[in-house]
Image (cartoon, rainbow, N blue to C red):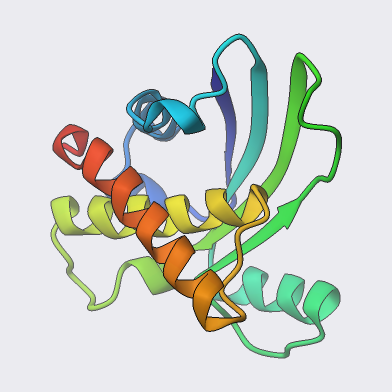
Length: 152
């Protein structure tokens, strides 16, 4: 079972997502079985942020002085434990709300796709090499397909 602690440091998120913690935890319930961590308690933190703050974090932790759509910080520990902390995900509202005035449905769809991307990074997926990119993209599509009908 996955439990997400959702924090928001930008009020703009509330315009498009009313019950943020419920929304993200509900999405995880529809992940394919191999990502549900049956018989384990799995936690992660999700920070809903903006371009200004994500740029600061990107500069501090990745030495990149620009904003980005998402940052993932895996917390490496043995995955065999009964309780696992996967790490932290930060998403920028500014990236998600492009183009401006994006409908709520398409905003949520975009957020779910990028959340899945960040989630897979917490599980040590990456996209540096072409083969890894293809593998990660395939997993993203499978997960999104399983949760897509629950975005509302």
